[in-house]
Length: 354
Ligand code: NCD
Ligand code: ZN
Image (cartoon, rainbow, N blue to C red; front, side, top):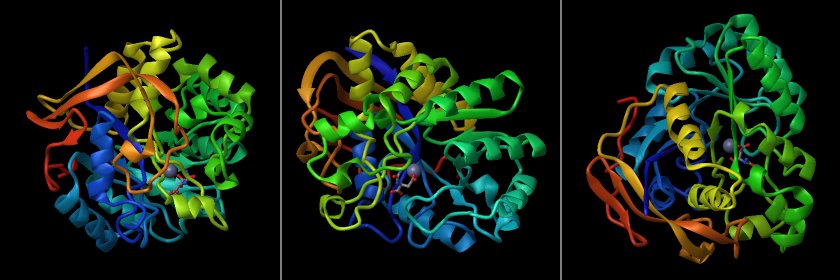
């Protein structure tokens, strides 16, 4: 048995308000705890999106009533809310900017709309960008121009990790995260192993090539955080017409990473650094006293959506044999999860910015 600190997931789509048929604050935080995640940061592309004071209150009220682990809520950058989100910054996890197309309405196509956000965001916490390939380069340039910290969400490409490496060497205040699905799946491999329908491989950024995956593993030292981009959509939606992009992930991240440890591809120290220490520093998150995760690093089991806590009802890792199981999670002195059972109530979770 090994004991880890509670994991921090800086990239989770909770779906509440507005799309609770996919997930809500209760189910997502149950899934998080079962995966050893004791703190999550919630993305703003809900319905409505979280982009001003009243929508921020809407999300935080739901979280306060229903969350079972600790949480923060992102604000979303819109075309004309730069001053408003800058004012609300202390109550938020950070600012999220969608610069490429994905699920939801928050997208800033016109690059001149990025300027006001980079100018006005206070910069105590980073500007987090969904920016792929060349839009990532543009966002890096703008961060450098305004001397603001930028965190690149879910990098997936060789050219992205190498560009970030160069930017770091030149003193740009850039950090980044990688998702388990971009480390453990490439597009061709996933189509063969794990996708009974085409919708099951749809995710943004798209699954990449084997060469991209290899480049991420070869440059792990450049990558600051592991983040799940837990993006639950129901099985019916994934297998239907126009499948929305996104994978659930908050319950499978730790077992997948521990399996990589057992294969000698990763160390437990790297898990703690990228899933606890670095996200806490980058997002200025509080310590969680008396909080830990007990894992049986020798336990082998098969990933099954039917045994997981997300409402979405599927996982891209169905049937994968993993080694390393979460046995018990203690959060702020309370046993929150033990032997498959959630033991804390809705409302136990605390807002990290309260
Ligand atoms: C996310 C979602 O469904 O909200 N989808 C995804 O494919 N990752 C949006 C996002 O993070 O891009
Ligand atoms: Zn996301």
